[in-house]
Image (tube, rainbow, N blue to C red; front, side):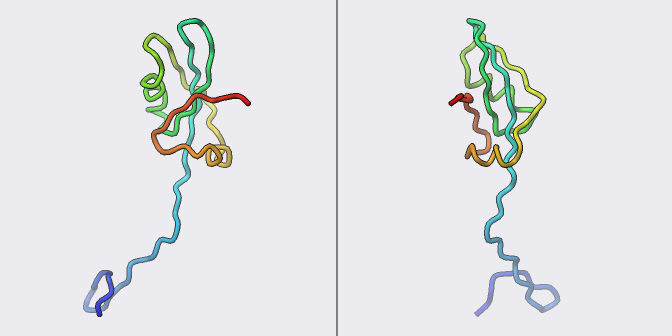
Length: 93
C-alpha cells in the first residue's frame, strides 16, 4: 500500500499532518457617521486596506466611514467569532 506523500529520489517523504492551524484573525475598527449625525463603531474582519469599503457596502448610501487607527487585540478579536471578510456593527451591552 502506498502512502500519500512525495517521492524524492526513490524515498517517500510523508506530508506533514496539520491538526489544527488557525491563522490569527485581525479585526479593524471603523467609525461610521449616519446621515442623521449618529456615530457608530463597526468591526471588520478584513485587511486594513479593505475595512472601510466593506463597511460602506453594508451601511445605507450617504453614510460615511473612516478607519480608527487602533485594532483589536488577538484575544478580543477571537472572542467575536467573526468570519474572514465579515463586518458587523458593534453593539454596546
